[in-house]
Image (cartoon, rainbow, N blue to C red; front, side, top):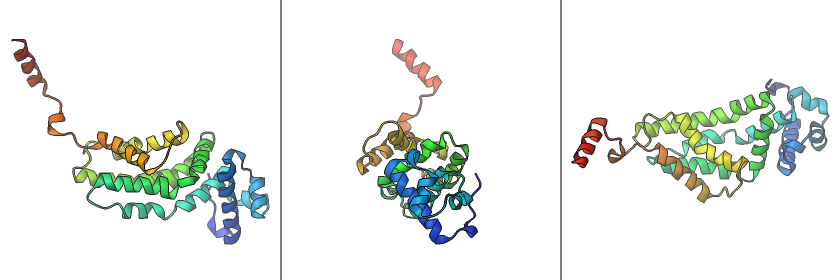
Length: 217
């Protein structure tokens, strides 16, 4: 997907287009949004939109991504205590409740549209998924250095363990997205991320055989 060239945009026109796209996607879902509808609501011509964006999905994604810009780094900056689990809950709540909040339907629409639009899918990963993943992975690595997360865990697989629960609820099994749910998501994920305790480690094979032999006597 060719990225829009900001130098060619009129700021007021761009803002009107992005605002219209985001509002319409929130009202009826991306499937019912059209370039014609965005143009009419923004008071511009269709050619103006097509000059900068290749599809309605690209317009809505651009509007969505601009809404989130600046919050990713802030999210990490405020989650730098010595308690990784508390930091993680803060980061997820900020992302899923405070930032996205009632607009989760727009996110679901973008994800759905990206399933049959490879360009939109690539842009979604580049502008939203990868930047967020990089910051969360950075915090996980620090937790590994502090001994709060198992050292042999791939940070990006850990991210999947956390955020897959949220996207499953968003896309497959609807339910509450409140603070209690976020806390439960993190609590469940931490069961698999914490370093094993000494008494949880597998018994060496030689000792296991010896123990069984003693039991049989």
